[in-house]
Length: 168
Ligand SMILES: [Ca+2]
Ligand SMILES: [Ca+2]
Ligand SMILES: [Ca+2]
Ligand SMILES: [Ca+2]
Image (cartoon, rainbow, N blue to C red; front, side):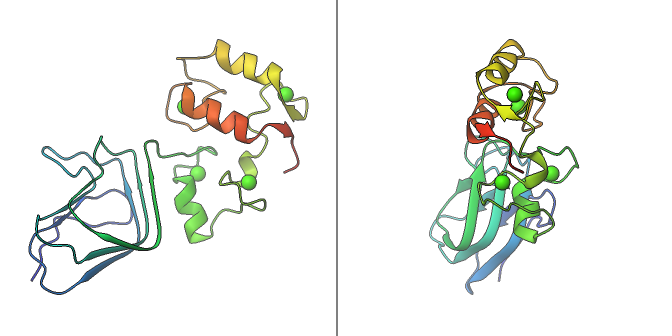
C-alpha cells in the first residue's frame, strides 16, 4: 500500500511512505514545493527504493528536492528556477515536454524566446546586451529572461546560451 500526499500536474509534493509495489510517477511537473522537513518535492521513506520517476520536471523547490532513494527512467530535470521565458504562466521545460512549445534548435530555450536576450533589439546577442543585463543586475525588468523576478546568474546563463545572431 502507499500513501500519496499530493500529486498534481502543476504544483504538488509526493510522500512515498510504504509502497510494496513499485509506483511510477510519470509526466509530472513539481513546481515550487517546499517541505517543512526534508524532500522539498519528493520524500521517500528510508528503506524503500521502488518509486520510479519518468519524464518528471522538478523546479523551484527548496535545497533538497529529493530525499530518499528513487529510480529515474525517461527524463528527469531538476532546476532551481522554474523558467518561464515567455511569461505565459507555463514552465518552459514542461511546455517542451508536453510539446506545446517548439524548440527547433534543441537548446532548451523555446523558439519564441530565442531573441529575448537581444535587449537592444539589433538582431544579435552580444556584449552590448550583456552590458544592459549587468546594469539591471538585481532588479526585475526585460533583462529578467527566466522570469523569476530578478536579474541574476540564471539570466546571464540564458544570455550566453543565446549568444550570437538571432536566428529564431
Ligand atoms: Ca512558458
Ligand atoms: Ca531553441
Ligand atoms: Ca543586441
Ligand atoms: Ca531572472
